[in-house]
Amino acid sequence: MRRENTSVVLAERPTGNIIPGQTFNINKSSIPSPADLKTGEILVQVLYLSLDPAMRGWLNDTRSYLPPVQIGAVMRGASVARVLASKSNLVSPGEFVSAMSGWTEFAVLNEKQFEPASAFPGLNPQEPQDVLSILGLTGATAWWGMTQIGDPKPGELVVVSGAAGATGSVAGQIAKIKGATVVGICGSDSKCQWLVDHLGFDAALNYKAADFQDRFRAATKSYIDVYFDNVGGDILDMCLARAKEHSRFVMCGGISQYNTSAPVGPKNIQKIITMRIKMQGFIVLDHEEHMPAIRKELSQWLAEGKMKKTETIVKGGLEAAEQALVDLYKGANQGKLLVEIQNLAEPAFKL
View 1: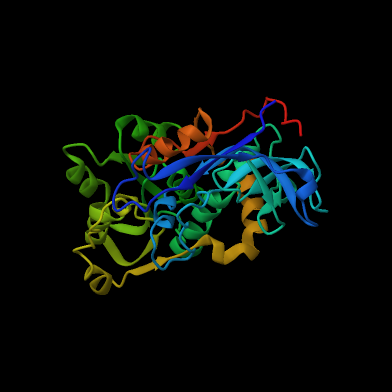
View 2: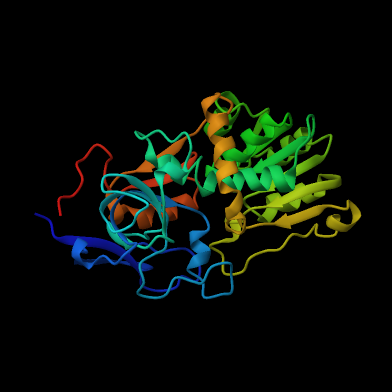
């Protein structure tokens, strides 16, 4: 019987791109024992690991909304996991939890590090990974940014960058539910077609196309009311140039700048003044008290067919996670990117 626990630890801080086999190391250790659990703790087996653009920032030794991952520490990450043993009154063995387990197969968690599946209304027990996407922080990020900062009105023009990614795809659908005209920006023709045909975007533009700038100007001829930014860089600059007076810019991410040693700021920053743009960043973790209401509405939209979910699942366990994270920054995913650590259909590990 297998007695080792595989984890991925940070080996060095990257100065640019993450380098597979160098930035992280694989670590082997003994599987925690139920006998070691303290009151309020649980032992879990991770099923699916969430990969998120913000992870690159967690590797930098700089001031941010979370402390950096330390050298030699297990890489930070959210997961959906199965409870193997419990000394918590919140969950029992066999149940699923949304966990901040990190990149590891087995973990001991306290009650601040997990939420029971019962906290996610409408969760299909056959698809517990939804706690990492549409019903989790990804969906909540899109919801908060679009509804509370963007606040699109019927008929307004909303532009979403990184529109085929986990957050952008949800944000654009929320804008459609609110009655806006939605233009998505992404990195391939197939993703553009998916945004329009499957998710209901009004238009989608491939930023790699030779005529992208012309198409962008045509798509924003009435100027932008709301811009949901996931990428920063040149596309942010272009949207500033096409902003309507009193437009709202939702600053969610800047994935185009995460792996560069010399990030580039927007040249059109003066448009914030001349167009009286409201530009606001946010961290959804600041709004935990609103999570039950957010999850309820997202679940309702999903049940009513107003919203669709898509995920890209990478097989191969933790050994595949590092390359999958590199591929995330290259736009390899459509919708939420997950790494399968153990298939849901496989039996739970016998302690």
